[in-house]
Image 1 (cartoon, rainbow, N blue to C red):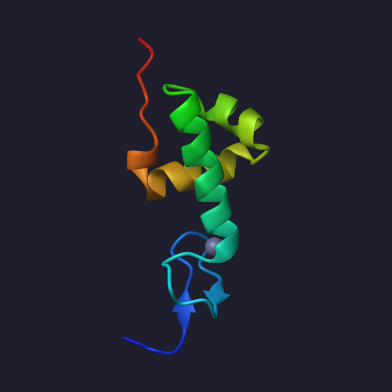
Image 2 (image 1 turned 90 degrees about the vertical axis):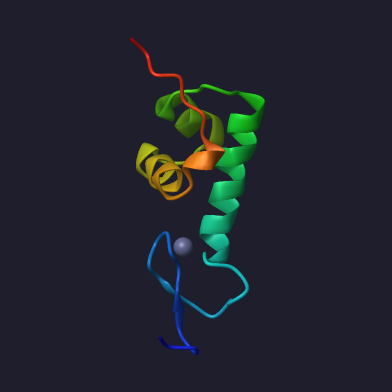
Amino acid sequence: MDGHVRHCKLCQRQMSYSVFYMCIDCLLELEKVSGYVRRNPYSSIEEISQGTNLSKESVQKIINFNPRCYKVRKKV
Ligand SMILES: [Zn+2]
């Protein structure tokens, strides 16, 4: 365990900000995604990506990282 250097859990970039597990960029993205999902539950990745101006890749990464921010209803 290294107490001095932290890496963002999401993008793996080294970060100096140590209060959170994520760098500030990823925190903002996570905020955007969870905010959007709160307003638009059961959105698809694509809708979230469009609504937040984040790439589908980033949205997917955020959701994988924090599934609680995303309630998906599986389309059958
Ligand atoms: Zn990050």
